[in-house]
Image 1 (tube, rainbow, N blue to C red):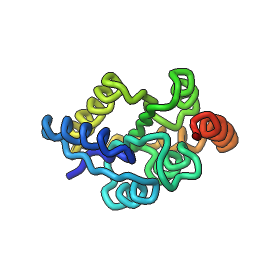
Image 2: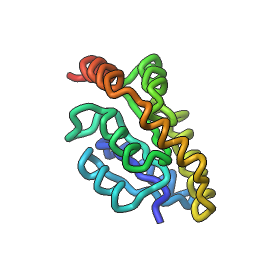
Image 3: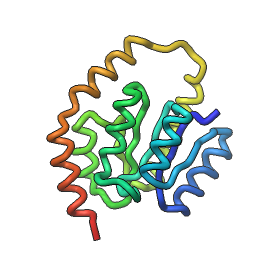
Image 4: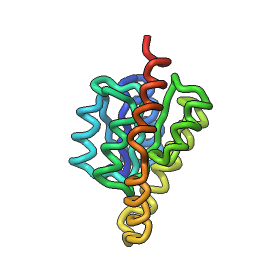
Length: 160
């Protein structure tokens, strides 16, 4: 049973993350593109999704995360990026779309693994319907215009 899904196209990072997770007995599914990530999410319904900002096949880096949150608002979503600045990560968190926006550093990796550990501990427990309802309402409050504006600005700065 996969408690988490990581979506990233950088194989060395994916391999490292999956090895660390496996060493702790954590089951994490993987995907390397927008399309594959969405398909794996819909097949597995993991409790945590960890995604890179720059993904092959994505029009805008944050749009996949919005699509996932729209399908299941209670899923914990973590954005990892090696190209966004700390200010960019704070701006992404300010949208209310992600539970955390982290740099691709050892600290970010550790925080992402901690989220997977928490998901494993919660797995099979009772559903907190109040939290699920609050997550749904919060997802509906995300401004598509602000998301599009931030994503356009970030994409322009991070494109080669």
